[in-house]
Length: 218
Image 1: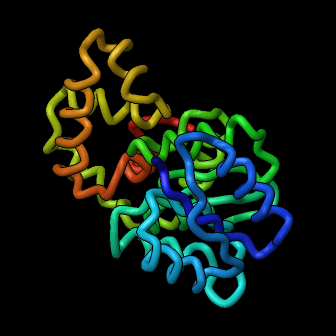
Image 2: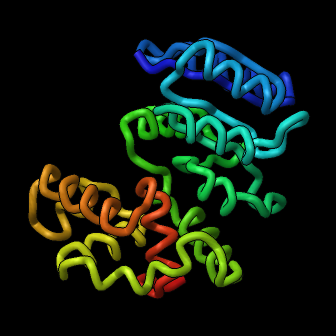
């Protein structure tokens, strides 16, 4: 069972998402909250697998809430945003979020996203996500976290560099395995080594690193 906390200051949005998720046999919404501070508290109390979190929240914004949640446990954070308005998606990914959804997400895509994130994957495959990350990384100051990763790429083997490039394109483990004609287990091993060698938190930061170092173009 995937345990979820839903955090959004708009009650109709919050209750709507919660109702959709709770209707799934493998998902249980354990709490609904209306601000970032309550979200952090709910995660500490209920120990969910996934926190569905709006970026724009009162009391404590979603980015700070994500940073605290990701730093204190294994709960995965899935951010809610609006593509045309939010300039903070990049910061949310650096805070440790495993991906983000547009607020007008379809019912099936919402359910799929929660399952994907709970399984340890990241929501970076959709073209809109890749385009957004590309746009943000191209304008990000050089002093941003991970900007020095180019020097560290030398620590990767040729295959690990290839894996990082494929991560940067938003491919899942299964897609990378098909591309390289290897098993998913082998891909997972390579991904773990890439993260360890580059000192990256997760696949999301690996994607950002691939863009920042020029391994993948926008």
